[in-house]
Length: 495
Image (tube, rainbow, N blue to C red):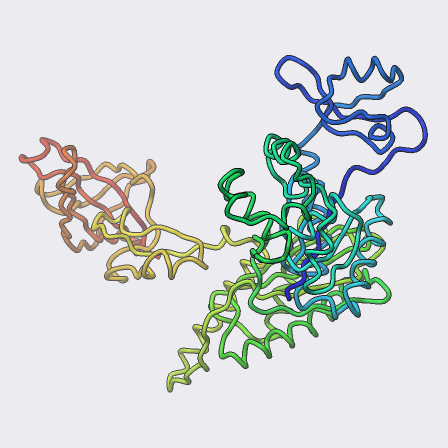
């Protein structure tokens, strides 16, 4: 039977003194949204008007409810729980569900795992109620409405039988209707035939009852996807030096790369998670152009990434747990060796891109991809280097010797002198400097896009001045047909 644990993290109880409650506006009145243990003992339950609560307890301390901060705090606790299993689901507003299938043996059993979770969170000042059962619904019901326990496989019906019907997480009106019918506990509902229950109270009641009794096991939706391959290591004594962190990653990289090689795959995205002793988690990711399974390459990229962080990792009192996960992988064949050694040059380019991305980020390293347009400035666009293969074919400059790679945007206007109106220029002025043309080649005519009414035909020329500098110029508009006096522009300079 699959094992799951339920985490419920209410606000920590205050020390002796005035009870504390959290309030929020409901319609036109301020009402209690939550309270500490002392407030609950005094009967200050959620939904009570603040005025009524103060009438009962004048010394009551009220604080405005901040649900966004609560959600962020729950996310931090979920990050902490990632050390026990990669399958952690949020159960707002104050709960977590952990799928610990196959994980309990890492802490010598479910009882040790249960105790370790409570001990570590208690050290952080967090009060926890946790139960372990075969289904998420059963564990949740026991944590919220019963006593904390570890239910043996198949023992869910007996464990949840004494719980109130509210443990099924039903609507208040449904719970009230069940109470009026004399069905006040889960055990009382379990003894009744299911078809009459579904007909009177709805199919949702029957489905929730089956989950709590362990008859139906729904999978949770984890907040982070399960990585296909991962390796982790815990430390009896926390570490804080970067050299120690990289050495631990080197060992983990050997494990994950060996697993990838066995499956004939390579990783494209990797993530290292560093768990600090105070519950803080730091995650660092790297991506590669080609499928990668070389530990030395991974460590080099992680070193680059650590060195490029705007704020170095703060170890605090040290990291006591590190995990290396392969986020994305794909089949990777052994490289074929060519006679001209071109694969080595391609690999060097890929390695360079990987290092640049690790240091400057994915969006900072870009490459060209081709666009279906014959207009020079529209014939290519840039995309992140890692996404070029998905976004289009690599851009190769057409007639690489006849067009410059770098173009002016927009084209620079120039003044020209030509022998005939539709011929190449004899000289041109650009940026207040006169250039006499020694050689000219062209024209290369590029028609305007037919769907643009204001488009003009361009005649491009490759020209060279007396100093040997080469330019790419064009005349916009056909003389006498599209323009009375066509204009000239400098579009690029050849290297």
